[in-house]
Length: 494
Image (cartoon, rainbow, N blue to C red; front, side, top):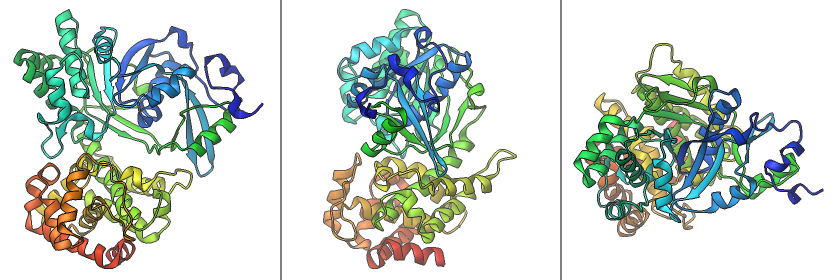
């Protein structure tokens, strides 16, 4: 029998090879307790795996209903296989395969938005979690406030029961629960936002207050928005990945997810309506997640972005390829070194060991994480990943040369042309604005850097800081003159 001739599903779990893990519980006894907005690869390789562990241990009977806010592709792939899917954990030594059963159902919000609101309003739903990426919150990243002029915000304020955005769905569902006399659910953000719980609470209450001051106050007083830190590298799934999983399973999985052995989830222990025993599944429950969040944003995410922009410009397809160049490996280490002095961690935190583990993870040859994928949506990511550390270092009169080169790499990238003059497929909410600025400025650092630094939605007042402007302009000039490879080599040799 060819591996692709049978489709993964509940009826053929017993036909999987013994080495493939499968749900260690009766899925028919599991009921929805969590709605997850943003049913992408990261959630399925991270939070859903933790919930699967909770179900296997018997510490919870809550399954997940996933909601795709845009495309039906994930639902269409998973529904015919009873929402089972494979997590392939790749390391240099080999790959382990595990079938996850925690996802019970999926919906596409734009097909029936009122039905998703109704489901979220069901008192049986205790948690609404999110991985909608930074751009999914209809906010201004520099301030953390709701962008009332965002097209989705405008739509949702005028179509309260048929929203499009994550904030719109959350507020509509909480309003319905308030009307029913039901307690609010916990809003559990798992995106890389600064102080993500507090930020989402601010966005949601601001949105709600535009509908009703009383609703905004009720949400602020009664709903919980714990901050979290999530960490697992999850590359985009390719057709060759699907073929490899089919060969391992002896059957076809339309949308498996690839990931690394490392996983981490740190959560503030504040829930309004209970939670699974997350700690038993390896989650770190803490009183304040901010130090861990900043550690991840400024060490992992910042160096990842630096490798993505500069590595892409240098012609490297994946992060692992980029890390094979010792100068780029040193670049990643220097980004972390510059950022580490801006962090204040709890006693016992070994930042040196954490940084070493990141470099090893980035270099994992089995993980094909594309530089282009990481480079997406930089306008939403730069403030949290790079600009905060730069601001803190400037306040201490410390140099920012390594971070400045990373920001310059982003500028060269969003200008839309690579070092060979070929078009770059820039994916960013502000891509059109960046392209217009780049056309007007031309490939001249002294014109392009100030133009992009003037984009308030990204840089805010920091963009007018003379030391930052000088450092970034100088770095961008070096990229235009020498190219990314030579610029990185010169930086790390200094």
